[in-house]
Amino acid sequence: MDSSTDVSDYLGMLRRHWWVVLLLALAGLGGAVLVTHVQPKVYESATSVLVQPAGQDTNVVGGRTKGDINLDTEAQLVRSTAVAVGAAELLRSDTPPDELAHQVAVEVPANTAVLVVAFTAGDPESARAGSHAFAEAYLRNREESAKADLNAQISALNAKVKQLSKTLSQVNGRLAPLPDGSPLRPNLESQRTTTQNQLNNLSGKLNDLTTATVTGGKIISDARLPETPIKPDPMLNLATGAMVGLLLGLGVALLRERLDRRVRTAADVSRRTRVPVLAELTAPAHLDGVLPPHEPGGRTFNRLRNEVVASLGPDDKVVVVAGASRGVASTLVAANLAAALARTGSDVTLVGAHLPDSVADAAPLATIFGVAATPGLSDVLAGRVGLAAAVQHAPRIPSLRVITTGSTASAAGLMQSQGLSDALDLLSARPGYVVIEAPATSSSADAQSLASLADAAIIVVELRRTRRPEVTDAAEQLRRVGTPVLGTVVVPRMAGGSTPGPRPAAPARALPAAPAPLPAPLPAPLPTDEPADLSSAGLAEVDLTTSTAVIRLPPGNLR
Image (cartoon, rainbow, N blue to C red; front, side, top):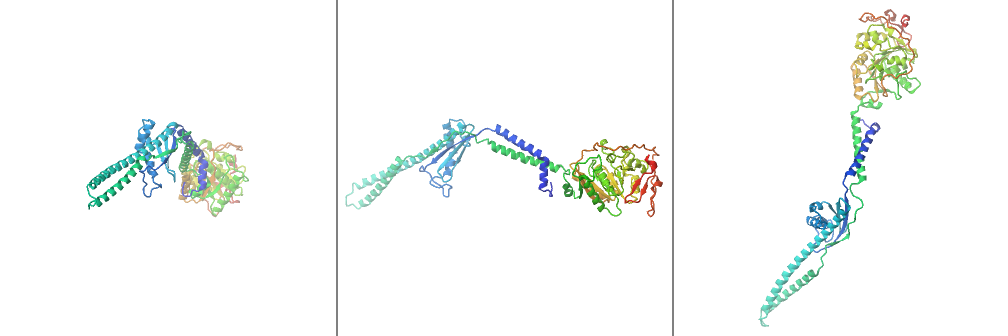
């Protein structure tokens, strides 16, 4: 994906790789089911404790909870070591207190003096027992702490009372021998009164403390036996597994899309290779004949013909059609473009210069037009026959002449020879169109050599086979030899070679005896100010009455 990617590209990616996303999403669900099955079950039970003031409670300034008791502090005390030790004793458990404390969670509901003590365990009974044990241990610890504080106060008061009683006894002992009018008596009486008052106050406090009832709180809702575990949560696990699988699937689909650089749509060509699209063939096509002009495929090539004619200059007549990738797509486009040009009455010569990629692809032009596979261009270049002998009339299209590739066994290296240039010069010597079916630019340098002899070039892109770098490279190759690139023709992916189909019977023509090993030299260029007579060269007769050079075979060569 690049900066030009839009929503349609992502939708297309999902449409192409939906099975990857679905597979990984199902894998995520399967993993979630497996995790849910093997994950140990965890049960939780909770006990609600009402915390009551016990005398020693103090709240910090600015605390979260209001009142005399700081419940946040009490929540921490529930998980303290002292409480955990008491809970372990109540449970008669051998588990270390610190580990038991980690199984406890304390919640403080808002605007209450309640602590919710929750305990988790591997079975329901242990969860309930643990929650009750910690609540009970906390209350006992709180009560013991309150009693200890109360006893400390009582002890302090008793010591103070004892001291004051001793002081009072001393004052009384000093007052007893003094006469009533002694000047020391008023001061001592004042001391006795003060000491007696203090002693009375302390005695009252001591009496209150000794009669006080100490309670740290009470359980208002005891732990219950849990019916279902809190972990694992099947719905949460399934949702998480599906989400992880979905995200992983989308990531893999995006990675596959980035690594797969094949052209998927015609828009990919124009947006990502910056090469214009002249036409797009949407219907499947086969190499068993020319597309009928009244069908969608035929109308596509009619529009392509109009654009090509409008793009060519007055003196331009040779158009090379080359595939960006290996295959027979260029043969399909070249054949139908030549047929569309010929249907307008123009004389057209279709030259097959594309060596087949496999035995199955042999002689595709012969299959399409119902002509003989040999002799062809390679036979002319090898010197076996003259050019006139290789030109064949298309049975169904009178204005179209076809030169097949010919004997491929002897074609190696001939497509870049001077003989090919001379042959194309002869074919383009008269007004008209010459369409060259060239090999793929990605597999051979012949396409570049042929393009250097042409006036314009068309690149054929086969969906889901041609790669974007191949399109860019094809356009660059053709531009480097000075040939204008009109644009691309996008065709659907083809099954491979020619599809067997009805083929009109063509008379088999025996090749003439092989001449000398060296090819016969082509005639010297004819003067431009006089009509050319190619029959003297033993090649053909040129009809000047049409806008394209039509090569007519001499009568002696039709036998």
